[in-house]
Image (cartoon, protein in one colour):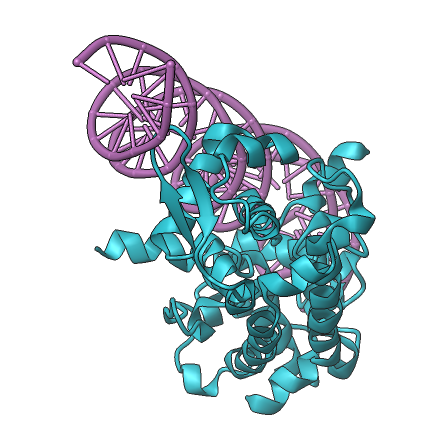
Length: 150
Length: 150
DNA sequence: ACAAACCCTACTTTTTTTATAGGTTTTATA
DNA sequence: TATAAAACCTATAAAAAAAGTAGGGTTTGT
């Protein structure tokens, strides 16, 4: 029955991309006084594919969390303080919206096709509350909370 | 650039299955003194495929939220009080785990491959906190909160 | 000049979600 | 008791998303 459990394990969770991003950020946070760090070192530490991680770090760089240095002796390094990197921003960057429904998303709003009047949709109203409370959690936990536990 | 936004709209959110389940439960909640309700009526009200909704209602029935009556004049009806149906149970049933990572899931736990020692993983520790706080929200909001807003 | 390292884009594969199809069983009722 | 309406069940197909791969381009220290 292992197959059955497998089916359930991986839905609605963070994607591997996001999970790996957190691992990488944590690694960079721990080594932030060591100059730049190689993709290879992070990949090896966590057993992640080099090429896959490369894409992720690139996204994190473009979004302004990381700096990089090309060529021999190059690598990546954090350019933000860990306390200024909330979980919510990383999740949004790599996984998209945090809201549970498009119709309550702050950043990626889209109306529901099956609702005639959103204002009168109880599900919408309740999900707005859920969104606000969830966001409150994810905006107040940062990379520095992760680093504190390591 | 519409395609780009499209890409972002639909990740990490509730699946349509779960969303439709909430719509159906809400509909059944509103009509709970009317005897049984046809799949067709719910599908028509929200413009959902009859056959798709059929599978969803069946799951809700097997999980003990709904009762049904076969044959002519049959249909579905709620067999639980709306206040006893927390969002968390519906989401878990149809979308799987609520935790953001398998390694912090209460119901669908699985160790991370990339972590040597979970006890020392800061991400794990922080995600446990996030899980507990999120769960606190989703277990305390119920179908009756949705119905109250309609 | 060379090799090490990041940068960039496109593609392929795998998994998950979203349906659809086609029948079986049950039940009210004419 | 024949009929039609409705839920029940399983399998499969199609579409979308996530995960991973490929291959070269660019920069830089030595």
